[in-house]
Image (cartoon, rainbow, N blue to C red; front, top):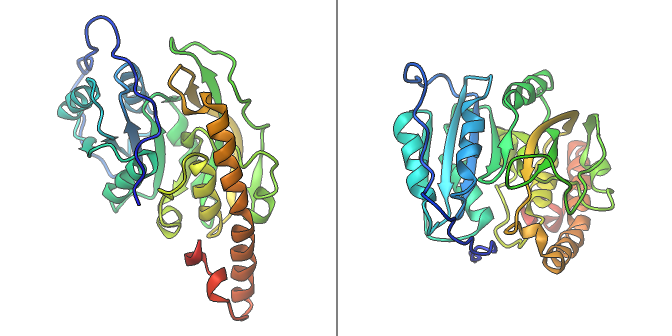
Amino acid sequence: MLLPSLRPDVPAPKGPAPTAPAPKGPAPTVSVVLISVVLISYNQERFVGPAVESVLAQTLAGWELLCVDDGSTDGTPDLLAAYAARDPRIRTLAHPNQGLSYTRNAGLHAADLAGRAVLFLDGDDTLSPHALETLLFHLAREPDAAAVVARAEHIGPDGLPCEGRFPFPEPREGRKELSEMIERPWGMGMYPASIALYARWAAEAAGGYNASMRACEDDDFALRVALHGPFVFIPDVLTQYRRHDSNVTNRQEFVECAYRQAVKRRPWYRRAWNAGRGAALGRPVAPEDRIEAL
């Protein structure tokens, strides 16, 4: 069952609608796709321009940008279409409002099959210029890794650094298996989604995002990806998480309820992890403990 979007409507901004700035220099050409960036938006007219510009500013050339709009009623679709008309590396998709997880999955399914990795970027967040290059460098060094995870910083509506409602997790470094990550007291701290670059094979093996989850879907997706390979954590701050009045994390009761739902699923991850290790040793795996049962 597809859930309706849980993001509150964003009031129409005051003043003239933003437009995509004219590109500088010669028209870009499509290169070999190494990373598919899936940008999702819902009434993000105020902030989606900086999000797209942060991808255009990447030091890594081999990317595609899939802008998936979740039924916006403001000027977001027109703004994204303007960017796509000027740069062949940008594609746009749209569907009636279905929710965050559905929208991310739509982008994953539409991604270039040649891409080695995928990164999910919310339409109100931004990436540091060297984010994709740094993440891909570490992923290439660990061929069996399912993901590379960096860190984020809070910014306000004006793009300047600010304090956040929830602190970001402490720096983590090195390879971590699911059995280590699942014991964290406040989830894996997998927010915003853009702190992680997922190996394409692992993201697909995990089956995409769980559309039945109301929040904490990033933790759930990450844990299911981790069933297929270790995560590599790096201390670099590569993402800017924008704080504003419409953030879902402003609704504390909603987030805490969703977190409790996520915690209830942890025994399933643990069972699937143990079953996977047993299968590798030739032991039979009960149907309820298979990864597919999650």
